[in-house]
Structures are given as structure tokens and as C-alpha cells.
Length: 298
Image 1 (tube, rainbow, N blue to C red):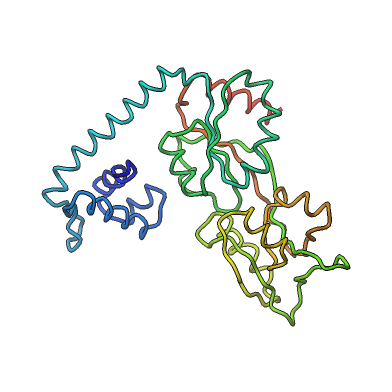
Image 2: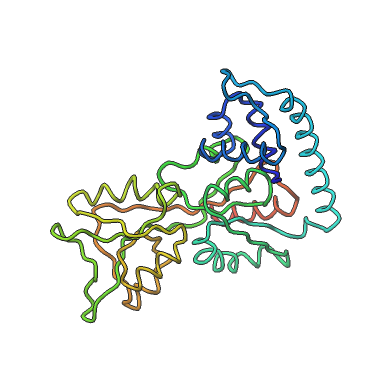
């Protein structure tokens, strides 16, 4: 049993169909359907009549709906009590995409330390959609994520405040040969071997939408997908192909000449945003936000 399955089922009952419930839970409809099926498998009974439109809960589903709501209330009530007993207000928790956790967060939090005092800083990482889901569930004080182009609808909500705290850009990079020339140059005669983020990831979707169309004259051949930017960088350094990566992730390798940036006719900017839910989870989180906002706007 996973608590997110309970949230999923409650959302399904409230929204009345799978597509709206999946959107409310910030996941694709196939993934959402699999999670409802997993809940039914765990319980051993069907919860919805899939052959009826509009959606109708089974008798077991009606009984379980009230129980699911009670369990969620108990879980979050207990969490609140435990946090209070452990002086959670003296700590600050962040959720960040893996690339930002490696490249941006350490230097940023170091610069903020004089403003934060001796607060315990907790950092968790998750891929874009997973990170948003945990953030919207109230699991952390702040979400640190890339933004560019179409931002997730989940972050365009009245209860979400967003603040730009940094900027980056996507660059197309290749390893070099002994003479310092790119191993995978842009050439209309040779397909470019590409190392890509998955299409359903934030950066993967952004690359598909804004970067690849700029290579319309360049034949391309995807050879690998990896959800981790560090993994794509390692493959690029081995010479396995060219890759679109945040400049902050490959800055040192570009400076040392291990990678070279390939020319692109477009510049794809990445804002780095800090997000929080209102109301904040603690007075400490509110104070932290106000100080970070004053610094960013100053």
C-alpha cells in the first residue's frame, strides 16, 4: 500500500473520470490508471465500474472511499504531531531536480547560510513530475526546479508562489578528438548521434519542443535516453554522442576542453525557480521565504 494510491482514489471519486483525476494528480492517465489498478490488486476487490460512463464506484469502492479519507486525515494529523514534537520549525526541507541538486543548490544554499542561521537543511531529489507531486502533497517546504517554456499546470495555482532565484540555459555538447574538434559535429551529411532525456521528462519535453526543431537541417539519430543529466554527461564524455544539457552541469568540462558546445540557431533559457505552498508549513519556512525573496528582488 502506498499513500499516494489513497490520494489517487479520492481524486478519482471527486473528479468523476480518469483523465481529470490524472491531471489533478499531476501524472499521465496511463500511470494514474496503473496506480488505481495497483490499489485494487492490493485490496483484492474492484473499486470502480470501468464499463460505465460516467464513472461509478462499486459497492466496495463506496465503502473504501470513506475509509481512505479517514486514513489520510489520520496520517497527516500524526505527521503534524510528530513534526511539532521534533521541532520541525527549526529545519527547512527542499525538493530539487537531480541536476540542480548537484550544480546549483550547494553554492546557492552556501550564499544563503548567513540568512538561515543554524537551521537544519534537508534536501531530497526527484525527477520533475515526482518532485512536483511530493511538493504539492506538502512533504517539503520548498521546491527548486527548472522552468522554461510551458510550466507545469500544477505550479500555476493560487496556493503556489514562485520566485526566480537563478538562470541557466540548454547547450548542445560533444566530446572532442585529439585536435580539439567535436567528435560529433553538425553536418547535413552525417546523422548526429543524440543522447537524450526521456520525452516525458521536463527537459526531454523542452528539448523536443524547442531544440530539435532548430536542427531541422541536421539528420539526427537518438542512441540513448537517460533521465539523469549526470548520466548523459558521462556518456557524452565517453564520446557516445552529443547531448543537450544545462550549461551549469557541463561548465567545468567546457572550460577544460573535454566538451565543446555545438552552435545552435536558438537560445533556450532555463529559469531556476523556488516554489512554496501558501500557507507555509512553519514560521521558519515563512521567514526563509521572505529573506530569499528580498535577496532575489534586491
